[in-house]
Amino acid sequence: MSHPTNFSKVTETEKYIKLGLYVITFLLAVAGNCLVLLILWKKKRKSVNDTLIFNLSMSDLTLMLLSLPVNAFFLGGIEFPMVFCKFLSPLMTATFNVSIFTLTFMAVYRWRVIVNSLRPEMRHRYVIIWIIVIWIAGFVLLLPLIIVAETEETGGCKENWKPHQSRVYTAVLFILQYVLPLTTIAGAYILIGIEIGKAKERHDSDAQDRFASEVRRKEDLQIIKMMGLIVILFAVCMLPIQVAWLIADFGAEDHKEIGDILLRVADIAAYLHACVNPIVYGTITRYFRREYIRYVKSVFCCKT
Image (spheres, helix red, strand yellow):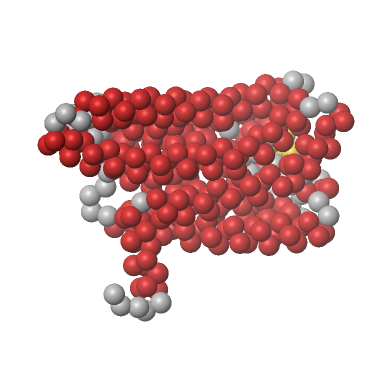
């Protein structure tokens, strides 16, 4: 589960294609997420949503700086000591956990804000506590991987599971890392949609309330659109690797080849989600779009 690609079956042509895609993905993701972190770091008044986006970008950046290079080196046939298999290789699983847990928290928190619109925003220190809990939970889920990880004679990593343990772990990961979070997020968005509809009906009769409600509704919808698109892209990018893991552990023998082929391309799709988030921020939100343009102009020495 920590090391999705069977590199021993990858042809030389595939290796060069994958390395090229790794380089492109790495550069785009690092540049995009560093820009997001810089923009949010310099923002004077940070909302809860800003802090959570900062955490999401940190998770994506960690994935790209630590996990992707390790995969690239494995692909090149470079041998690594046990410490890499025990800690760096499972980081892919940990960062995926942090990303989806953060998105789940964002959805539930947005529902809470809309339902209790008169309550003040969560205090910053409580948000930080929740972020720490998310990272701890993300790493706790990969402890079994750290225990079973070993080095292979080929220089890569393998997982030395006892009979049926791998199936149990794959099933648990699929539920906690994919099904349960996405179900929770979908439920939160359905409740948000219902609440926004009710709020609109309540304020339609009062012009002053209607104006204030419309401003708030536009802000909420902008955040919801951004979060919704990020969640959809995450689900799409993570689906191939989740299916590949399930086929590897639960598929019949005649399906193993399909699972192996899927594993050889699924990691690219999984890494891709770290690239698309900064694009989504700039596409949906005016603030990020304005800051992107300002930083790009400053890089090319253009004065506004």
